[in-house]
Length: 157
Image (tube, rainbow, N blue to C red; front, top):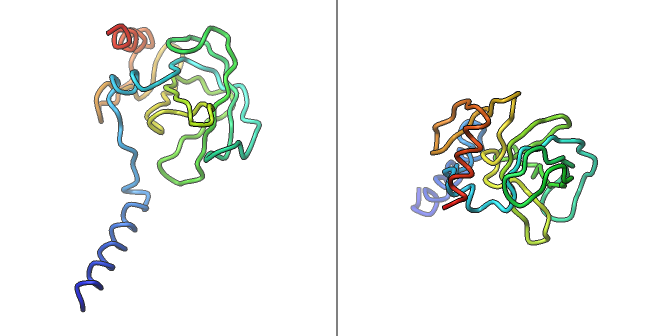
């Protein structure tokens, strides 16, 4: 077997591994970076996911009502965000009725998307943020006021 054949087989195996569900994973940004890079941070309620095929890379849109604004939006504002790349992973999905704490950024076309793939969306259950993380791989449920305090502290600096 030639070196070129070995390299080709190695590349194929590496790509196959990366595309498999077990190894597919987005790189999580620390909270400090998510807060700094986000143009919008808010607790939102997903009202509907009506449109398909928005302009650009994404396949669906969601309309959301801002429940608790932190950065870049106001209370009760209705925002539209694009989601679902169609890829198995990494991907982000929104469904009607979800209560989420989101970190959003704008695409070149001006439309909002979730920053940092699924790490930019945390489900909110009552007064608890599910799967909250400050550093990579440090996920835990925390009270919503604590999560808000952490974000606001980072934004103040």
